[in-house]
Length: 109
Image (cartoon, rainbow, N blue to C red; front, side):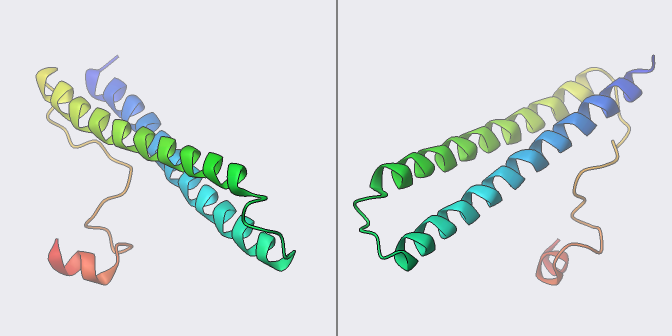
């Protein structure tokens, strides 16, 4: 099989994984919001949910570390791609030049 097709398959999985971690981070942030609002609505002391809140903060931090590791991996694989002689631009993922990018980002890109 052509190296570029193999690299594309790996890139697709990397982008999917990055998206999954981003989605998990967003869900965890929503969970934090619901935890705080729910506690206040039930008129429960902050002390009551302190351990759960701290655990969620730790989980969000771990997701942040996972995301940072994936970003580093992405950069390393870009170098590996070149060392393997693959010069083709792989398609997929978020393209900063797409129209879906926020206007302020397109203006500075």
